[in-house]
Image 1 (cartoon, rainbow, N blue to C red):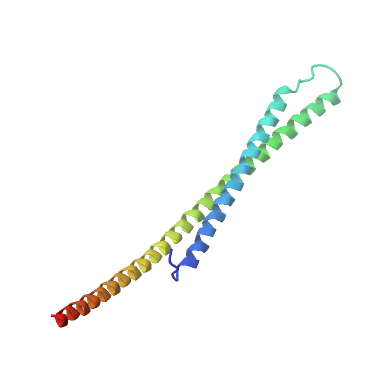
Image 2 (cartoon, rainbow, N blue to C red):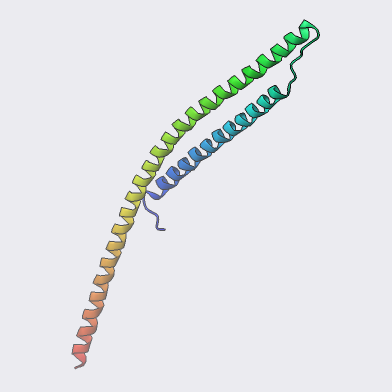
Length: 142
């Protein structure tokens, strides 16, 4: 690919797109980890046996542990919601970055196309000159 005044800009725009995509992947990975953690906590809640007899302090500890686990789930769900909002923002950034990239790609293609046309015209002119020279040489030989 020939280098134009837009080549470096295209590289920068492409790197920005990759960077945004990596951020999205990172946030999605965080969401997946939080969802796994929620499932683990829910399984722990289901596996805990509720005390039916014993000291009141044991029952209070059980209730405290349950409240803590439910609070952890709530916090993780809030983190997931915030991460989804971040993803939405990053997707908007990605959309704009892609638009900018496409604009500069179009301009780059236009420059390359004009250069190709110029070179083709130059080649045609040179071939015409060669044809005229050969025609004149052929006339002189007769």
